[in-house]
Image 1 (cartoon, helix red, strand yellow):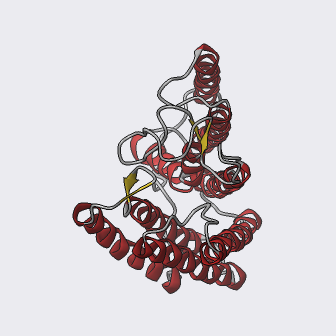
Image 2 (cartoon, one colour):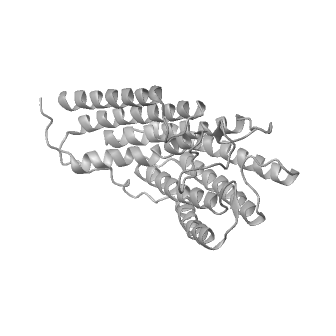
Image 3 (cartoon, helix red, strand yellow):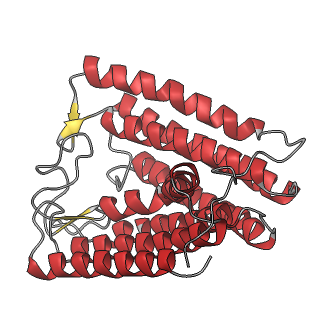
Length: 305
């Protein structure tokens, strides 16, 4: 049966009387300023570190935190009930994010790598601080995720998008631990490339390896499920005429497919295979995922509302 037309807004409105998280919005603004500073650094500072402009890493992290901070602030504002615990978790996230960004920028100013750098006691200590900060951020986001699971979000597509987005982004965070366990050619522990040394030929802007596997790809894709799935829910509500139950199931299909994509990208990287040079097995796996996703989407849209 054809789904009925609905006038439901594309995404739920901010909760009545809600106050957006000041700390998370502050993080968004600070990261936006750092984005501009880092971009200027890329243009004006000709230093190269691990094969890329030295300011590229803070630029990428700053852009990521702009989206991360704003999205979490939005999630807390649209939850049906205010959660002081989730708000405190947001404050914790701001604190550890500032620590991580400060270490990254500080190491750039020193001309040192921020990640996997154990060359001196100071560099090792700073890397340890970053690792601890990420662990704290991970568990703080778990708190927000549990809060979103426990509250009944009336808009079902948005509910699936928020919960799956938080969950898949946590999966993306966990993939970073694979990087810390990679052994480099010189016997050191910690690398994002697989099968080739870090700092080799890479894709423009991202720097993802074009000669070997790169765990940053699935890490990046997983993290940004937090934005991608709410955008999917928005697009379905804004530009389709399907009823809310159909859109909710489509978001569910999209979320499962997105998690599958993250796992396939991880599998490809661990096989020391560049994103740009997939073999037949990899192409077959991605084709199977696409076919299953398309089939599930068609089944949902042809089903009853």
